[in-house]
Length: 408
Image (cartoon, rainbow, N blue to C red; front, side):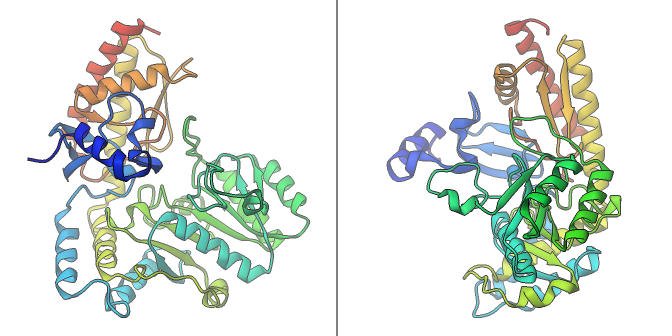
C-alpha cells in the first residue's frame, strides 16, 4: 500500500524545495487538489489516495491518445528491449524525422531535444544564427517556457536575459508592426503561439488576418517566423496549427503531445534555415534517447490513422455544449474560450477566481480533474461516455456552487 497524499507531501517537504515546485505544484491551484498520483489509464487518473478522476488535463497536455495507449506502449517496450540511451541515436531517429517531414508541410528538417523550453530556445538560436540579429518579438503575457529569457518569474534571472525581447499585443498587427519598428532592423525572429492561451485569462483564437499579417511582416523585415506549437501541436491540426490559415512558419517548436507522455521535443524548419541550424552547438545527453522517439513515431502514426484531431474535436464540442447548458440551468454566466480540444471555462465577474476555484474544487469532489486558471486538454481517449461522466460531475459541482453563492 502506497503512502497517502498527505504523507507524501510531508516527506517531500523535507527533501524537495517547498515540497514541490514549478507548474505542477498543487499548492497554487486552489483547494482540494491532490499532489501525487499512482496511475493513469485512458482518460482516467488515480491519485495517491486511490480517488479516480476523469482527466481533463491530460498531464497538462502531453497525453493525447490516452494514458498507456497500447500502440505507444508496444513501441516503447520493443525499443526498450533493444536499448534507449546509447552512444548514438537509433535508426528510429531517422524514421521519426522522416515521418515529421512527411506530415508537416513547413518541415524540411527536424532537430530533437527534451522539452518545450528546449525547443523554443533552440528555434530562436537558429533564427539568430541565420540573421545575425538579436531582437525577438513576442506577445505580451505569452508563455514560451522556463529558461531565463522567457520564464514568467524573475527569480534567479537578470534583466539582461530579457533585454532582447520586444513585446506586442496578440492579434494586433499594428502593435507587432510598431514592435518591429522599435527594433530598428535588428529582429531575428517573431515568436507567436497558435492562439492566445495565457493563464488567468480567457483564451483568444488567432485572427487569420493577424496570422497572415505576421507572416508578411516577418518576410518584409527578413526575420524568421517561429510558431510555438508546444501546447497546441497535434491537437488542432497534424500539419501545424496555422496550416488551416495558409500560414507556414520558418521554424516550429513542438513538445507536449509529441510522444503521448514520453519526454521529447523537436524543432522543425525550412530548407533556407538548414545551414544555420547545422552551425549550432545545441545538445544533451538524453536528447537522442530512442524510447521517446519510438513513442513519438507511434503517436503520430496513430493520430493519423484514427483521425485523432476529429475525435478530440467531437469530445470538445460535446463537453462545451454540456457545460453551457449546465451553467445556464444553474443560473451562472460563463465564458468558454479557446479551441474545443484545449478548452477553458471562466465565470463572469469573477476577478478573484473565487467561483472558479470553488467550482473546480467541487469538480474534484465529483471525480473530475480540471483547472481554475489554466486551460484544459482533451485526448482521443475521451469517448462520449467519458464526456458524459465528466458532465455528471460538473453538473453536481454547479449545484454546489449555487448553494454557496447563489445564481449569478
